[in-house]
Length: 375
Image (cartoon, rainbow, N blue to C red):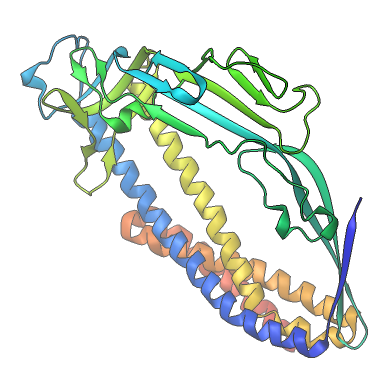
């Protein structure tokens, strides 16, 4: 059942909040600007480091024995990653020779959802109706119901057994005649079920690699706990790494960036480098979008006082708000283009100059529109 809370905010409070929002807006605007500038430099530096690694690469077909002549070289190789380490989870009676042993824990809990609806009032006030709803879900951490809005749910969440998720990795994983460093071992994937050794009873149910604490796995109740045990078994992998005696480390490019890769199965060096370039591009675009959004939000908060002043008449405040929002979107996009182009001027002038011209054109367009409104 939904639980609703109605709150009101006076005109004066809204103005005060808008003034406070200016400071937050300036901070967000600055953060977005910094992210945009840093991101372009990071993209170019990472791209250069990958290309430097491509040029330095030595493809090795056999790593069954340590080759002293490869020491200090960046190599690509494929081999069987294996271990003799025995990993244990005494709580569930598991003992396996594996590269990694994973315990995943889920809790059946009430989860709170919140939905707000705001309504402007004549005179500048604001009414907010917040609706809280609760649904049962499997989650990775217990939910503290004492923080719920609805008093009827304050003590709703319980936990039958407090058990933490964890992952244990082998210390000694070999790759032919070499030993894999921890950062490469962490990249080896492929979960395989592990049979557990736990006694079943009325509240403990075992099904292969799953242990269920509760009355019935088919009809979960609040507080039930579900544990899944899996392992990462030895497998063929492909790596790109710098040889250091009998192990590997990351390749250090001249610009300070590092590079190393691990791929499951037999994967060519060309494919691994292509994946690295694709990941770099995807991250750059993600941060560009994030930076632009943060800049626009910052601008809206900085100029939020303008629609707030006119909220005495809600329809007028909405018109002003829509206008401010549009200007902030266009202005934020133009500013972001300017920042990106200035960043590229340091790294790729031939691309940065056209971007700078586009940004300047956007700013000129805004000024022209503003001038036309005053005439």
